[in-house]
Image 1 (cartoon, rainbow, N blue to C red):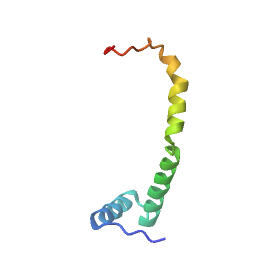
Image 2: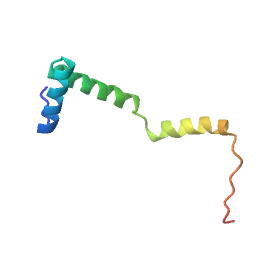
Image 3: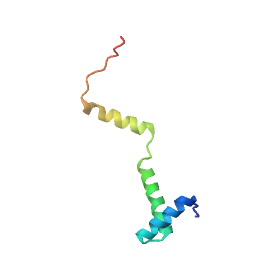
Image 4: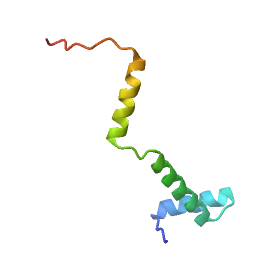
Length: 70
C-alpha cells in the first residue's frame, strides 16, 4: 500500500522518525495500526450505548423527574 501525506505532515513524520531512530515506514505503520485499534475499540452503535446507559441508570439513584411545565 502507498500512503501519500501532505508536505507538512510528511516532513513532521520524517522528523519524528529521525528523533525516534526508526524508519518512516515503521512510524507510519505504527500510526495506522494505532488508529485501527482505537477505531475498533470505539466501534459502537447507538443501541449499544443506549443499552449500557439503561443498565447503569439505576446506580445513579435519581429521584423521578417531573416536567415543571405541568
